[in-house]
Length: 247
Image 1 (cartoon, rainbow, N blue to C red):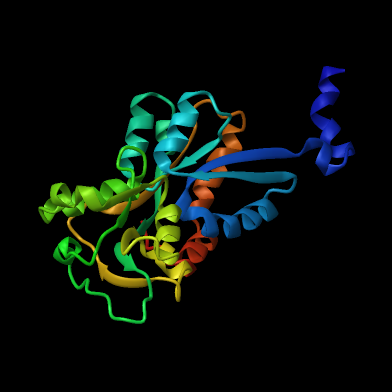
Image 2: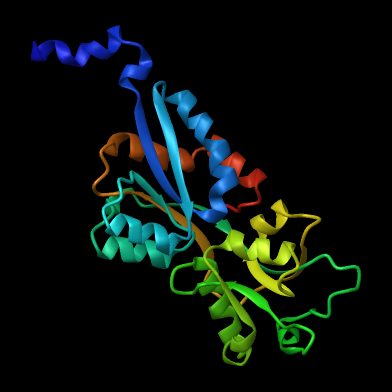
């Protein structure tokens, strides 16, 4: 009887043998990954991709706590490094698949924004600045690095409004609840007309996105295929359309 089991899927409907791949991915990847998923599923009949989007640090903590995840895609190298150090990832599967740019955005007010450079954030008219939480949100760490390089981080502390992920920063700015915020260019593009890019920000580590198979994945081979797919032409074209750069 055991010899017949591998062939059972051939006789049963696809749904009976379907596999669900769980991908935990940085919030900034939401729209691009939702477009990538059906392309991957089309190449893998019977496979469904399920996403969990949040700040990279939050996602890693969920993996630490035993969440059933197959692939982890981070918005920075530091978070992935922490996962590797804790042996949570299959190290040989790690692969960079995209890059991004940090920008400072403001609401599209009728009056011109007074912000022309980072130093303008210290002006009295700028009362609240949205940033990601540096401990768990990669965009927050990039922001802190940039503001420290400009010797502004300490002085701006009373103005900072901390967000749980980059999309929350985007929401704060688009609703006019803050005068400025730091997001990725891809997020700013999503809210074109609702926010204005004041300037491109430097002085931080390169914004790069690595992905890896989670060591405890129950679908390791399929997870490897997904990570490999991210580097292929089809996925790279989708990422490019959403504003991401090459890895």
